[in-house]
Image (cartoon, rainbow, N blue to C red; front, side, top):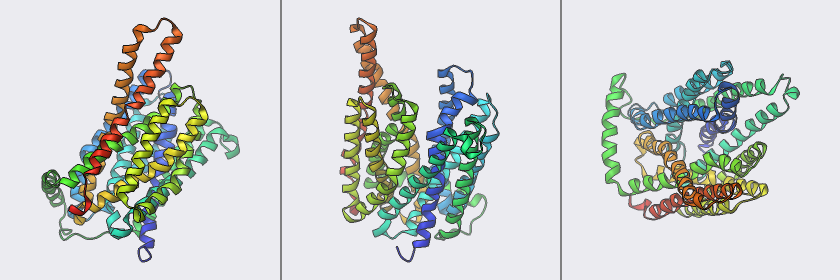
Length: 435
């Protein structure tokens, strides 16, 4: 990595930059602030529906756009230009949240949706630059290094933002509401500033057809997209890996998105959940780097299987968890494996795909990541509902009804085991050397 050190650091700093949005905005403040401020006075279920609709629309747009955007970028060697466009669109939209007034939930959802599109869109082209800055024998480590830097960057700013909201007077801020709004500005500035290093330090391999302009890019991209659909179906290992990835990353994303809700159902305080999120960030920083090194030395396949095994343990333990301290311990364990499985999946996929079509193939990869999170929460919720309906007739008192509700919740989490088991079985049949 010696010769490419500057490019690798510049590439990883984009993860350092945009992870502030993932932690402070997506996972941390926006959902709570939306309910308490922008959707003030609305029914709790109604505000949840409003937020869910915005998330779903944004995710659907980027999932449908991802493969085509990748194909166009590969045809024109303009990955960095696309990254710059989406990254700064996301940063500008995030900063714009500062201006949204109390009760204006429509504008908040509109701006937030475009911020998500910017965040997810830029990630397609960020991922696709990985093969250009890392040799094949170091790609696992570099991918892990990127995720590690993401956990560090997102965790550092999130820690500062949490302190701002808990002790606004220490930062010269009038109240917690103003602190949250200023936090959105801080994310935009952080994201925009550290992206500059990626722009300046990361090279891009020029494609033979880079002379095309205007609609030539689009026509070439659409044509290439059609060809890639056919190729993926005929390339057994790529097809099997994407299917395996769809299952096990669905399990990972379900835990990420539903852990807070599950913790609240067990009666944990919101402060406990914020502390747990910070734990995941700071444990994830060294763990992602270590997993990248582990994939380089011990083998990426074994390391991915290890990560899947850790998640199986997390789910089983989660079904039996009763104490707050157990939630903290699970946060540590999740932090150990979350970045690792994401980083190694990215680096493993980069080995399977043609080097001149990285953005296009990573478009499919990221598309699956967006669609994956649809199935897991639905499986979890449906399982819980079925179990509750089956047991409810036998409940003679309020106490038993509450107990049945907890049993149903635990059964819902247990259903996530199916995703990791299916993903692990399918991944077993993927053979990198045969591609």
